[in-house]
Image (cartoon, rainbow, N blue to C red; front, side):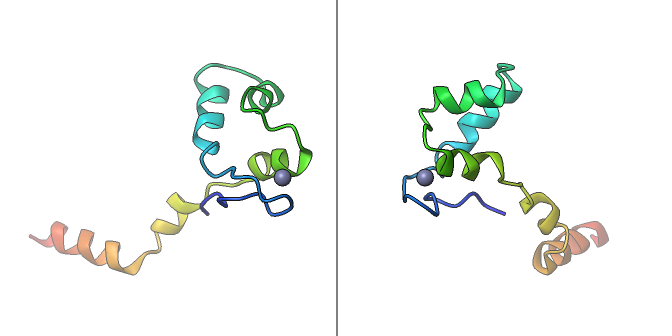
Length: 77
Ligand SMILES: [Zn+2]
């Protein structure tokens, strides 16, 4: 799903860091620990928010009835 905006434990805003984290790990080839350190996520409660997040939104959109109807209409035209 979507990344939670704040850390569940301490309340620090972490929702804006997930995209930067993915960019650091995939494009710049940093290790996960280095990327989290660079993003200044020092507390392990905040680090777990980023590390344990699973991006499911693309999978869920396959089951969205409204967008499937729209795609179906486009295919029939
Ligand atoms: Zn935290």
